[in-house]
Image 1 (cartoon, rainbow, N blue to C red):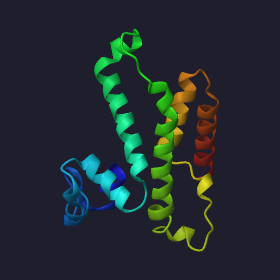
Image 2 (spheres, helix red, strand yellow; image 1 turned 180 degrees about the horizontal axis):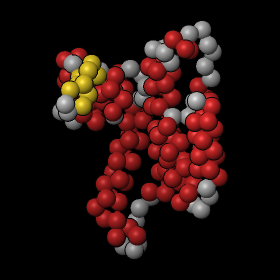
Image 3 (cartoon, rainbow, N blue to C red; image 1 turned 30 degrees about the vertical axis):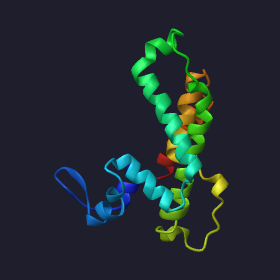
Image 4 (cartoon, rainbow, N blue to C red; image 1 turned 90 degrees about the vertical axis):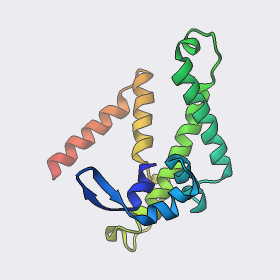
Length: 158
């Protein structure tokens, strides 16, 4: 939940970004875990709902199973529904990412003043990255090549 922490960044020092007291009082005071404190902050700001928190817990449980029992899952000794959770994972990442862009990044960027924003057209970076990984793992490199070509075009236009 680096975006939430980054939202409260107020400078830099020799160790990197620094956050002010507001981050501690408005986020970290909600939970000793920065992850869960950030999730609670997102919930309080209507970026996610209680159902999303349940989905997160299921995904986290599956992640822990894969991290600690990967061999047993791969060899079929332990059942896992990790493939079926990709849709939930992408959906949750998209929901948070779109909310962040629409409610934090766009309102704080004067380049978007007065512009109508179609939230359906917003593709958060985390979602794009995950989609590319899934497609490449499935044998398709079409999305990856499109992204590479667009990146080259943007560099040439700059």
